[in-house]
Amino acid sequence: MASSSSEHLLSCPWTPVDIGDSQFLCKSWFGQTQYHLLLLDSDGLWEEQMEAEEIQSRAQELNRRLRASVEALVTAVTPCLTGGGSDHVTIQRRDGHMTLRLKSELAGMPFHWEFHCRPAPVATACVQLVRPLLVMSGALQRQTQLLFALLRRKDAEIQDYKENGAQLTRERLQTEPFVEETFRQDFMTKTFPSLLEEQESSLSLDSELQELYASATSRQNANSKRKRSEEEEEEEAEVEEENHQRGDAPAQKEAEKTRTPAPDAKKTTLPTMQQTAPSYPSAADRAAPKPKKKKTGLFR
Image 1 (cartoon, rainbow, N blue to C red):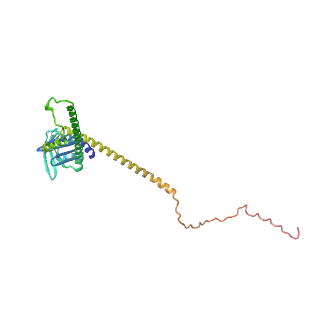
Image 2: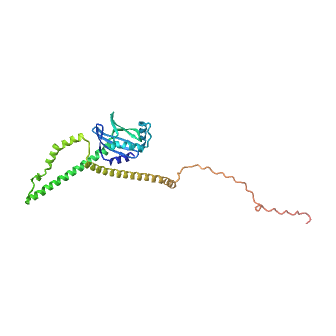
Image 3: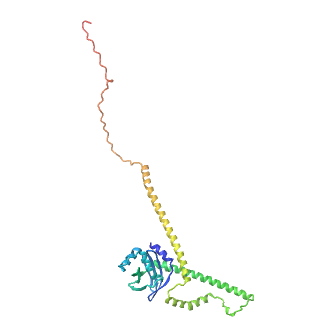
């Protein structure tokens, strides 16, 4: 969920917000039941990220008699940082934290809310601010180089016209040939200091810079999603391979048992004693009775 809100926040623009005597650049994303905000001032980058349960708990703590859904609570606090409300907001800084206190109304009842902002982690600052600004800086540098090249070609074109007899009809349009090194020195010594003074007193990004920032973050978001998708595919492949190996393990063990001969353990086999019943001759096998001899006497 945190990763999702960070991606949504990355696509949101930086907008100037004045709270009391403090001026901020604010980047905020409000969903139906959650929000994620960043506030940039001269002291640093501040962050708060809240989920549904945390929002409900804080609302009950600050508004004992108020009962409202998380969606209604998020809707009530959204205008505070998007420039669409006239609610009273105050700031308190203490122990490295910044608290924004909101006093408003919800459903005809007094409504109080507090944004508890802490210094944003370095990773968040890099993703949401530093990396896009580096991309923007590189793009603007490339744009400057292209403009310099175009000016040199224009000077060569004008010189060619002059050599062929062309004359400028209005002297006020005449310019000196463009010299890149001279232009850079004049910019750093004359223009840049005044820009620094303006930025110190005002935090803002004009429409062109906002458009450039949106392009940079859009590209960054796409790369992040593609990288995460590749990582998920790799994890799925690893899990599938593990499951496949686990499924083959029992079959392999059974095959090994079948192939492996029984160990040649020497066993002492006791002779088997078989009890045999006494055998009696059958009636057929019995000898026939001998005929009785006739008694012989003196008289036959």
